[in-house]
Length: 415
Image 1 (cartoon, rainbow, N blue to C red):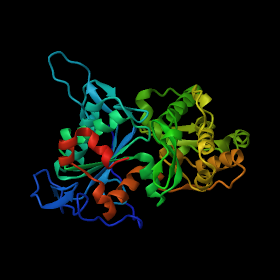
Image 2: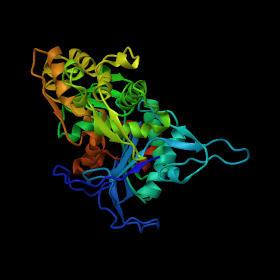
Image 3: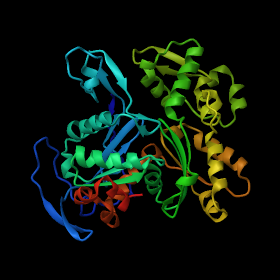
Image 4: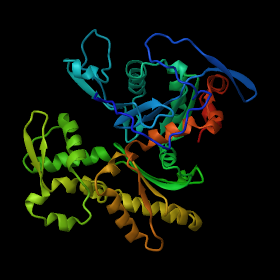
């Protein structure tokens, strides 16, 4: 698993951390158990003792886990969601290799993807990854930190309970809050209403949110996203004469981010002179390869999923479908607040192409699309802002509530 540590850029909209579970931070990170500085918080008629320490925000994605402390402008740790188990060896216990350990081991490994299309399919691997992040990367004790965890917009009730159970039973955290990824993305824009169009690594969603309320019944979801674009790019490159394999997918991912773009006029780009289509890319071994029309053909799959063999609608069509299902007074507001989120929307030219396609389909109102430069991590940024607000502190679900009500306690304060 590849770990990327990202420097924190300046961020003028990040709110100062307030007292409570998301309050004061310990000045140093250490493997040694910190001295507890406790305060008393009153909730639901009883007193709950919690440590005064800053909250941890975790955005669990199909491609990456993004983690950091509330109030920070950017996640401090971005870790691949893919772990590995060694191939079975008779008589030896199973281990999970995560993070930098993957680069040091020479044993044969089996690739493990604990999330598929944003949905957890291997809870033990998810817990292993979080344990690695907390202990090795962040160097914190989770039982000393409230945790805000993002969940997909169509997350089932059973999975929501499982998230709560994992955090309270597996990590013994003092307080938890679960929030929809789409809501957190919207908060990163400073909005309370909007049509969130998010396309990450494993899934894409179009989520109408009105006055803070997620309209789940008309939320649109498709199971293609950035990983599919990467695989399609690899297919196109191999058809042109290269021989990339799935074990080199990280190279293709990097090539996609550095060289590829979304065409505003496909026929015009296809008719460009060959030299204007091409770009050079340096492989890890130092060799240069030349990428041509594949640079812009791969992004077409977000608009024409049939290129991937999918019968699902393209992102503009999915967005149109959501708008058509909204009441007239709601869609007039949403169409002026279309918010792009997720790494797949970061490809150069995507916002302009999406604006053009959606405006053509919805001519009755002016479509206004906003694309934040930090939208690749908009879920985490929104969570950082939310968990820092003084008004939010009453929405933490405390361990005492979990012990009294069980996993269903999260529905009292979340969603």
